[in-house]
Length: 193
Image (cartoon, rainbow, N blue to C red):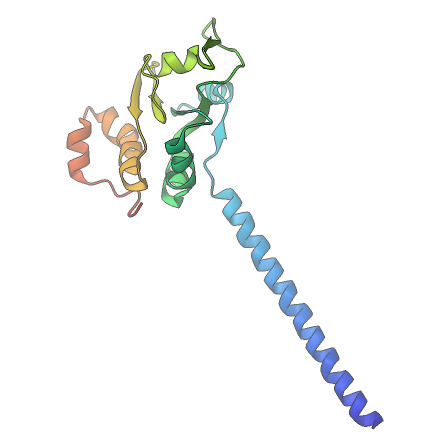
């Protein structure tokens, strides 16, 4: 009887030891995968951080102008802005700024102070209005190059279409190519939405 108990305890000990190793390896894999996923996000900056970083190394400044109540803005965050190809291309080629068009904090830029302007229950920020040329629709994206030339692109886009727009401002626009001509050549940043 003691031999049988010893045998069963030995098997149980081996089983528990194996499970401990299995859980340890599984935990390590999940932690690594989770860390990798954490790094696969767009590196969002504040307006001031992007302006400051652009003085060190010039890139196009991409501004996602959104509001907290905008459903299409949330869809963009949940889908397109999480596409790995979009994330990689954006982080490599742009300074990405998320700018809440209804934020209350003032921003000083080029010696001018931009403030929140109340209007009824909501209102808007003067910098958002300046970035969007007064056409306050959400989501909208401002692409700002040097010397502070700006193009506004409005509306939700899936990864394939948005990837094409991202590539255009880096590769097509500087060469003087129109967006329509660039689009015809094929934009393969993101293969699916």
